[in-house]
Every structure is written in C-alpha cells, then in structure tokens.
Length: 418
Image 1 (cartoon, one colour):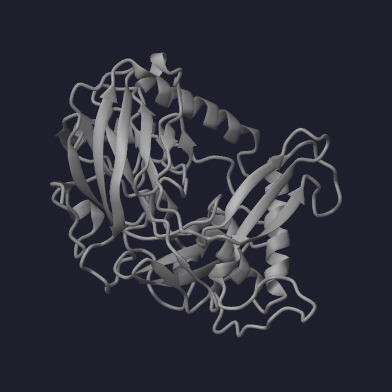
Image 2: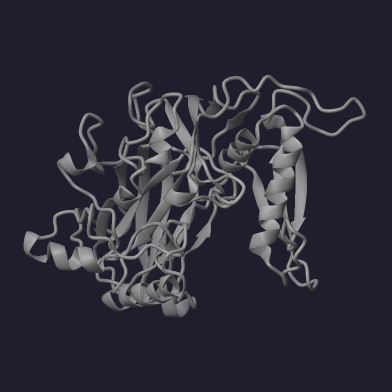
C-alpha cells in the first residue's frame, strides 16, 4: 500500500482532523503535503457533505443539505518542481470505499446515497419535473450496489472521484469570479441560481493564516462547477487505471480531490445523482515540463480512461430531440435533447411499476451512457441515453407480453420543496 499522506478519522468531523483540507478554490490555500514526481501515495476522502446525509428512510436531510459547506476536499498536495505551464500527470492506481469499515454512520462505510435536490436547494437536470427532494440509500456488497428504495436493480460500481483539479492562479480565479458574477447579474433572483458566487460563510481553507482568512474566503471560488483546472467534472470513466493530464497554474500545482462516487450515470443528472461515499484513492504523479504549450493544453484536463468498466453487452437506448415539452422548437439545443431522452427513459421505466423519482434515481446512479448522437441536422440535435439491460432483475425489453410489473417497495423518501 502506498504511504498515506492525508488520513481521515471516521469518528471526527472534517474540520477537526489532524490535517485539514478545504472546500473552496484559491491559490493561497497552503498545501498539506509535498510529493515528488514519480511518487505514489494514498489519500483518504470524506463524502462531500461530511456526514450530513444519513442512512434512513427520510429525505429531510437532502431537502436541507448544506450546500455552502461543500465539497470536502483532500489537499492541496504540492508537487515538487511543478511550475505554471507544466502538465501534471495523475495516475489513479486504486480507489474504493472506506477500507475495513463496512458499517457505520458515514457514507462509504458499506453504503452510499443518491439524492434528488429540491428546486430551492440547487435542483437537478430535470428540476421542473422533479422540484421536490428524494433520497435512495445503496448498500455495497463487494462491487455491487442494491437499494431498498429502488428494488429490482443491482449493478457493478465504476468507482471514481467526482472532483479533482489543480489550484487556479490569481488571474484565473479573478476570471472565474468575473464571468460567473456577470452571469448571475443577468437574473440574480433565479431559482435555482445561475451560478454560485464566493461565499465566506462555511469556508474551509486548510491551514491558511487567520490574518488572511477573511480576504481569501471572500475571493475563493465555490467548488460546484468544473472549470479550466478540472474540478467537479463528474466523469464516471475517470476510474482505476485512468491517467489524467492537468494544466498547472501555480508553483507546486496544488492538486486537490474528493467527492468519491461508487457509481454514476453519465451527467449525474439529479445533481446528487451519483452514489456518494467517502473512501480512499491511491495516486501517482509526474510532470511534463512545459507540457501545456507543447500539447496545446491551455485549459481543461485531458485523460486516458481506465479499463475497469462494468462489462455490459446489451443496452436499451432512448433518444430525444431539441423540442420542449410544450412543443417549442429550439435550435440544436443538446442540453434539451438530453433532457428529453432522459424523460423518455423515465416514462418507459414507469410502465414497469417504478415511480418517476425511482426511475430518475436509476438514471443518475446506474452506469448509463449518455451520447450526443447528432449535432448538425438543423434544427434538431439528437441525444441518447443507453441503459444496460442486465442491471434489472427482470426482462426490461419491449415484448408482446407487455411490461413486467415490479413491487416498488417503500419507494424513495420524499421531502417537499420549500
């Protein structure tokens, strides 16, 4: 096992650990450790809400999920010799739930969760159709996930970090805050909001000196969206065996990561759509000096996926086009066409006895594949959602016999939007 350089004690809150990570992006957050190029190391990761979501049959915790506190990131980790303009190579050697802790109150101790966020607390990809909060608990048996809230489904997890990235430079941070602030100003009262501005309250900034805390907390960017540094990309194929090439914007690169997922469908469409958990990740780092210019990587990471994907051989696919539910034509709107494909899949699964929210959760948590299938045939883009048929305990294919009827069980707990 590689040396653990960021340990977490499951009995303590994130901010009470021996080494404290962070939940904002800023170039002045001090690194917690320094690693050398070519070095391998282990990092513990806390699930993104630090235990605020519990293993029960209520969705009140999802309804009131403390979004200003996330993400609980491990790091930053400085890489010796890294300079702006380099490419940081990150190899994911292994990743999994909390080792030797298969039961307990924290997600990652033998279980994880998927949430549909309420409209007034972030919403999701289909927020207009699903404005309320819902939750599903998933139990882990080896690499298999099952849920008492979504019966008749089991699948192999493709475990991955939802968030990983390097620190922004001061100039890049200012660019983020300017452009996102400009977007918010176009509709400042929108629900859900168009973007999340810097928020000093609940900021966790590692070992930053108290004298600098208020200034940095007022500048530091929230971790919710992906940006030029990588960040919260939620790419399900960034699993064991993956090699990632991150642009370096500050001396040391200052790599941070967290938000581990046991499984996820493409798009993480319920916002908390993956199976969230805490756990560990083993990494190896290296550098390509001057690699940003050499390979034309001025922004955004590139990566080589690992080869541990679940081996599903049969899929049922649903398509959607860029026409709204009320029949309005949009021009090559791939976001809309993917929404329509997801809604078509939900409508189909409801015919088998699932509630709409159970079907929505399946699309968020199971290893579905989402694709842009046509983006040039004006006026309609075409997006598709591929669901592996083997995740169901029954035949989900259309047939003359009609859809098999499942017992939906207790269903996904619900809390009304406030």
